Length: 109
Length: 113
Image (tube, rainbow over all chains, first blue to last red; front, side, top):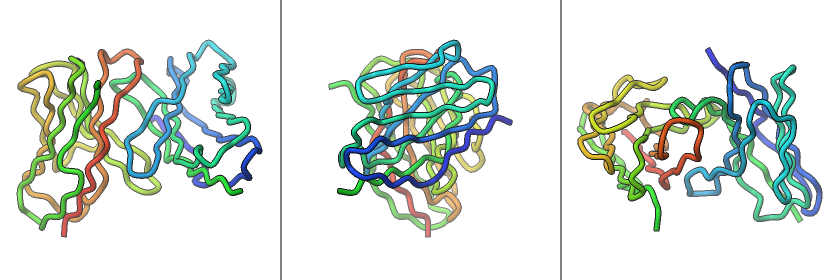
């Protein structure tokens, strides 16, 4: 079945860039998503990319999609302490989203 | 304010005691779903509903029931909870099932002793 994999932890210094990686197996996915979960809260959609795109930029966020390798990444420029959270990538349609295991981003001063 | 509301926020119960976690959305969304979140496993879909009286199993439906009698409500029912159902549960909704943003509730932390 479909599978989405992420590394579990990432630690970066404040002001540096963060890159969170994700690999997926379903090549038919039309949408790929990044969600953010802050402590004690539900998930919030950060951004998404259509499968026919290679890159999407939204302020400090850059999403890169390598369809050949089925690899998705989220780059956060100028990482701040408020970016500390768990980040989930997901693939599929909204009624059948497959989530990754989540990457816990820790930002230290 | 547009939101998905889950209750309760925290629940501790014992094995076999039936419980219901409520979920309500005020956005007139057609699609609603339930997920459970476990460490190292991410979110896994339990059940989803495309509209009133239309429900379907997700990836981990065993031990759970749902109903969708009204558009705004989608309760999750555990008829006989077991310790392996200890988890963080999220309800979510969206206008349709075609790729739009999912709106999540704040979660229900359930512990089954």
